[in-house]
Length: 220
View: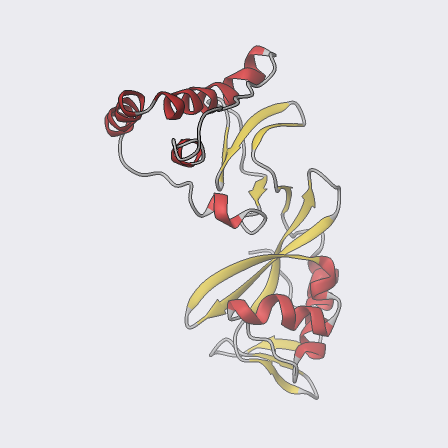
C-alpha cells in the first residue's frame, strides 16, 4: 500500500530482506504493521508481521522488543519469526528505519488486554475472548485484542454450536445441579449489570466437602 522502503534496504524476489553492504539480514519479510496504545496503561506496543513457511503471522510485542536485539530474539523467535542472535542487531536496525520512514502511515489502534465492559472514546464495548462486541453500527475496527494477555481465556472462548444447542445444554445444567445453575445465572447477569448500572453479583457456595462446590463454577 503506502509503505515505503528505507534507504539501503530492499526485498528480493524470494522475500529475503537485504541491506547494502551487509547482504541478506532476514530470509523472510518482517515489518511493523500496527502501532498500539494500551487502553489500561497508555504504553505503546507494536504489532509485528512476518512470514513463516509461506504463512503470514503477527505478534504483539512491547517496544523494547524492536529496540533491543536480545529482546527481539526472546519475543519473536519462538513464533517462527526470521530472527536469530546472528542477525538480531541488523533486524533491529531495519525495524527502526522502517518505523521512522513509515510512521505517518502505519495504522494506529487501541489495545485491549482485559475482558468485560470497556468504555473507549464514548463507545461501550464488551470484550469476550478475542472479540470486541458492540451495538450495531459501532465501529470497532480500531480495537485490537491482545490474545496473549490471558491465553487460557481467549483460547477457550470461541464461536461454536448454535443458540438452540446452548439453551439445551444450559437447561441440562439447571436440571442437574442447583449450585451450578446459580453460578450460571450469576455469569449471565454480570454483563447485564453494567448496562443496568447495578453492582455485579457475588455468589458464595457453602456446603459439605465433595458436593461439587469447585466443579460448579468450572462448568459455568
